[in-house]
Image 1 (cartoon, rainbow, N blue to C red):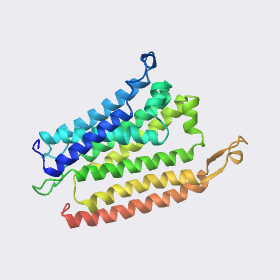
Image 2: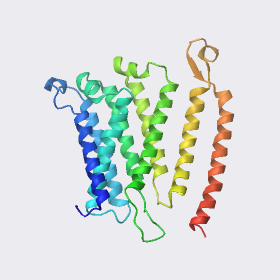
Image 3: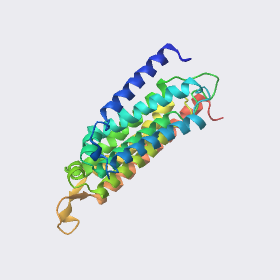
Image 4: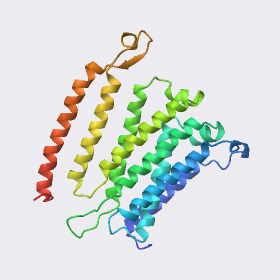
Length: 286
């Protein structure tokens, strides 16, 4: 059907169903017209979805595998839209940023910025998973499971990183965004998400030399990111001891930094050695 294989047709309909479910889940059209008057928050969501889909379309146009033509472009666009609506907006909702309630009913611009960051980040990672050839050393073609697998890895890592980000903040971070609408906090969280997504996009992008090579390279970078956040989140000293008795917690940088350096250097050295061996096995280097 549509020039697709049987399993690809099934995935296309499944992706379309998920995309439709995401649209219905986050739909704002049933709200009263007053909810949109002088309310820029829904516009932030629309712009974020446009940016995410424009990035995915650009990768498909310029940097995807040569076999991605005709119906396959539509196939991956539908998959990408499902990823944006379900993984992007859905993950934001799981962390407490709900499109219908916070953006539509409460007209909360700070929450809209955070949700928009989740949407753009998910789009970036999905686009990165489409980047590169499936079989750069031969004439073989890949399959939908390759970009989907790398997207799920990148998206899962992004969600874990944001959970660690919240651990570094006080317990009322999301509640403060909801009640006090602190734009500074929302922008900081948005920059964290998008910056992490850019790094993860680079990790999932590139030619596919096999699951062992790709997963190891991605996993090493993801492990380095998680290590950074784990050190920053778990090692703290009382703020009273480091900031004039203001109370609360602050990162214990003097105790944390040397261990971080050792972990980063160890991961980098290990990854470099294993990647050189994998390159030799796959014949990437002469």
